[in-house]
Length: 232
Image (cartoon, rainbow, N blue to C red):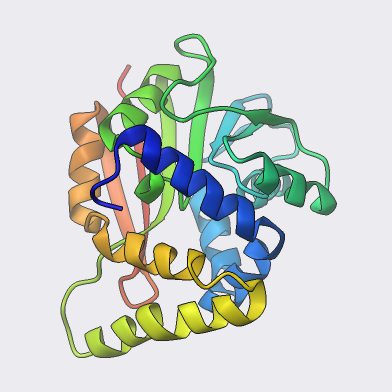
């Protein structure tokens, strides 16, 4: 993956998620022992959504974060955007959302359109992280909020060998059994291990212009929830 160009990487990631779309939600539940549901709930709470606000769920996949946002704030105006059509089609079985096919690098919205933007397990898959963060900053209104649910490199510690075994052996094995696609579930753990630490991602958010950036780690430090806001 490291030797792929931006366009080649985008095609590869699109292909990976297209092939696992039908079993993606099931795999998330199995890989996290159901904890991903709680993480999404907490991520949305960090946004403090209010009735009538516009939220962009970027890299929505099958729409889990968008549905959680509407559960917490039914008066929300939601846009659920992803560049993998197969993921959004798989998500339709769980309920209708205002879907939009869109590229995180070139969002089809005017400046200062949304009060909030959220993403789940998106950023480690993009070819240009800085550009994606700047696009989210651009489409947020002054004072708008961002929340990010993402994998992160854990700190070294006594649990490190168990974490590596789970990511490098258990997840690909489960993925092969459930999805029939072992390649995809080698890519997903590998992309997680190669991604930034939670502190590094917080720094990138600040470089993109976000303020009041915070982070909370989960699942032995392998998952992080980040949040911040656009300055007035």
